[in-house]
Length: 111
Image 1 (cartoon, rainbow, N blue to C red):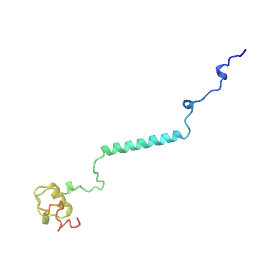
Image 2: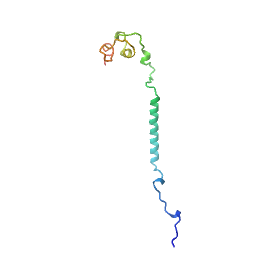
Image 3: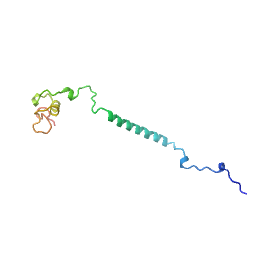
Image 4: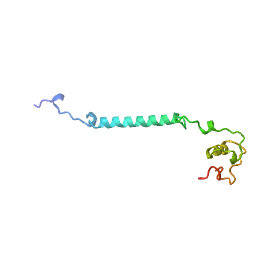
């Protein structure tokens, strides 16, 4: 008579689910997680960062110049000042040809 085999004597089959992850997949997964974290941090930092930060300590155009009634190029001291007045101050007469570049003969010659 045949004797039934006990379950413990049967060879175990190890399927895909039973295998341990390979030693290489753990570092690869860790590197991918770090990269995702860095990318997420960078995106969040850009979202909440000020749009323009001046670390030189020099004042911005808005702090250096203010609309003081200057209208003509002869009243300007630089191209930067003329651009500020054209952009921010009403009633200026510094862009005769209407191309958006002020004081082309006096200050903003290289445009």
